[in-house]
Image (cartoon, rainbow, N blue to C red):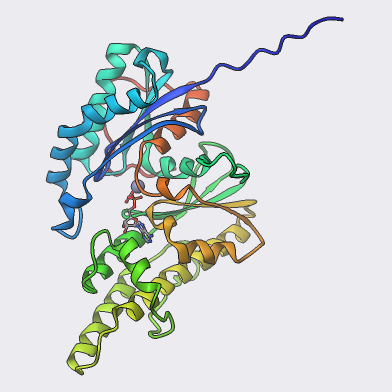
Length: 347
Ligand code: KG4
Ligand code: ZN
């Protein structure tokens, strides 16, 4: 009887580096979904006093901690640089001065080790965070193509159709404030802490979402979004309540605002999924951590909806390394003179 030797496929390990906004992050991921390390140095406390990200402060902080963050990611993965297969780094979109910090260390490491360097779009990073399952018992299937992806973060509200890995067709985006930005700005109006998303979610838990009928910008005939009118409506309501000497019930305002955002995001995404004949839906980005948003998607049974693990919704480098894996499989290798792309659209 002939013996058939089954050759184990070699593992591909990628170092991811992310510095596009206010998190300095590095991670090592194996085969696009096994997290070997995940280090995030958050700057949230530094920016909280400004109620938003202060770009100059962000880039300086990245410079301070990037080396230690990368070193820690390699240490926690128990790997030397030479045992890896490639380095993936966020090229954009994001804050120029912040992106440059991650790019420079990635280039230096690539030059010194000979590892190939892969430039990743931050939004595709968010998409690939939904391929990662941290819990071994998590039996959720991988997202299936054709796939409709909704990215909802502090900087973006974007609908993207994917027929295959790494193929992106942008259907629409925000015309003004991104969903997360609206959460942050409304939280500030309501006197809640930064970042606004988690603060509004918490306040809304004890509020009545039917207290105020805030406007929904449907923008019929397009796959775009707009949240600035909603933010203005919350401001006006607050001013009217103050002028009339009425009690300001922050929890009710937060719940009604959140319901309006979730209504538009879920309704338009489901419509688009039907229209473009998607098989599955994927929701990623900081706002995808929102419980009410998840519930709105999960209450329908027409589409399987995939979310990243809660800890990987906001910015991290695991998602950059995961996206890097798929580029690596395609033989991607960017040149060492590549520049950052602060306004890079995902197309
Ligand atoms: O993806 P992310 O970390 O950064 C960008 O790429 O922009 O997203 C940050 C955004 C912030 O606006 C924050 O308020 C929002 O995600 N966010 C949430 C929640 N957690 C974070 N929004 C709503 N509900 C949440 N639970
Ligand atoms: Zn992000």
